[in-house]
Length: 102
Image 1: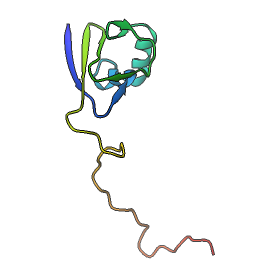
Image 2: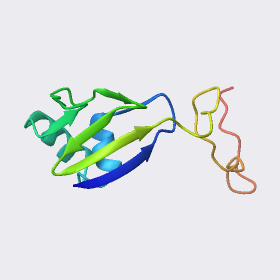
Image 3: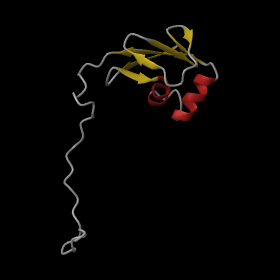
């Protein structure tokens, strides 16, 4: 049986998304179909909720693979947003007239 170790980035991940990001499903839609078809177990019990919240310590089984879920090693940002590189604000072309209503 194939073992996959998965580290969360926050408190949980939805089941369909977990299947997609681990490569067990090629898309979120395929992940949802796998769950709806009764092919997925969470902690040894069949799970039919496509967006079931999977948390640290749980084990997901599907297609001969087991995914063990781990807590994040670094806490998520306080506002819940992922860190992104700063992008400068986009401005219009040089000399463009203002489009404000007068």
